[in-house]
Length: 484
Ligand code: BG6
Image (tube, rainbow, N blue to C red; front, side, top):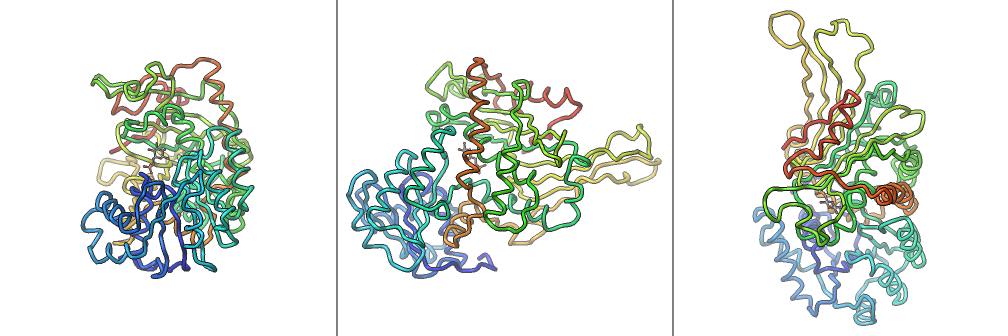
C-alpha cells in the first residue's frame, strides 16, 4: 500500500474506447493501483464505453483479464480485484450515431465530477464532444481527457482545438502528454525551484549544454502503419521531448499553478530557433536479421520516415544565449534509457593544471529506468600518488533514498487521471502550447521533405547513426552513454 494519498472527490469516469489497448494496458491498471492506494472513493464509478456488445458483467471480466495481463500477480490480490470490479460498469455506445447516448446520460450522476476519457481514434473526438454536449452529459464539473496525437500538424491541431472548444471550455480540456506525468519530470521542477543550489547556476554563464535522450529498445512492430505516418519528430519530439526541454529551460513561474507554468513553457517554445538542416540527423534502423529492419516493419518499402532523430537546438533569450540543447530519440537503440543531462562549464581556472584532464559537473535526471538523479562532482582520487581527480556521482535513486515509497513510483497515467478528477491542469498541455509546438515542427518536416532528405541508417542495438555522434564531436562534446 502506498501511504500519504489524499482521496479525490466522488466521480463518474467514462472511458470511451474502454475495451481498447490503452485502456487495458495503462488506464485500468492505473486506476486499480489508485484504488488500492485508497484514493478512489467507494461510490466512484468507472464506466467503460465502446462499440462492443457487452454488459457490465462481461466488461468486468475483460477488466479482470487486463489486470492479469498487465500487473504482476503479487500486485493484484483477489480481494482487491473483486472490490475494484464492483465500481465498474459498461455501456455499449456508438460514437458517431445515437446508440447508447440516452442510456449514458441517465446513468451519470449529478453534482459530482464527470470525466470523459477519449481513448479513441482522433477522428472520433469531434463526434464525441458533440454528442456529450447534445445529450446533456456535459456540465460545469465535467472534463474531457484527450490522448495524443493531438493533430499531425498546425492546421489539424487548430481544427481539433476549435472542435473541442465549440463544446467545452479550455479549462475543461485535459490534453495528455504522459511524459508530464512521469515522477522524475515533476522531480525536476522540485529540484529546480525548491532549492537555492541550482537556480543561480541555471543559465548560459555556467551551463555548457543540455542533452535530452529518450532511447527505446523496442521497434515499431505492430504500430508500423501509425508510426510510418508520424516518425520520431511527430511521435516524440513535438510533444514529449519538447515538454522536457520546456521544463529545463523555462523561467521560474510565480506559482505552481496551471496557467503560470504553462505560460512559461509557451515562452520557451516561442523562443526556440529553427535549426539548420545540418543540425538535424535523422535515421532508420537496419538489421541483418530478416524482418528486423524498419523498412520490413512498415508498408512502404522506400519510406523515408525517421525512427531516430537528433537535433541541436537553441533557445534565443538572455538565459540561454549560446547554449546548445541536444535532443535525441529513437527506436531499437542499445537500451531503454531516458535522461536529461545538464552539463556545466569547466571551472574558470584550473589550479591543478591541464595534466589532470577535463572535469565537469553534470546533473543527470534519469527518467527511466531507475528513476533518480546523479550529480557528478569532481573529487580527489583516494590514495597516495599525488593529486589525481576523479568525477563521482552523488547518486540519488528514488528507491534507495526514499525507501519503499521511492520504489513504488506511480505510473504516469495514474497520476494524470487523478489530476483530472482533482481538476488540476498543471501537467496537461494547453491548446496554445500544442499549436506553438506544431508551428515550430511543421517547417522542419516540410524542409526535409522538400529537400528529399533520406534518413541515415543505424544498426539495431546501436546508439544511432554515426552523424549524430559527429554532430557533438565536431564541437568537442560527446553524447552521454545510453546505458542499459
Ligand atoms: C508514445 C509514443 O507517446 O510514447 C511511442 O507514441 C513511445 O512510440 C512511447 O514508444 C514511449 O513512452 P515511454 O513512457 O515508454 O517512454
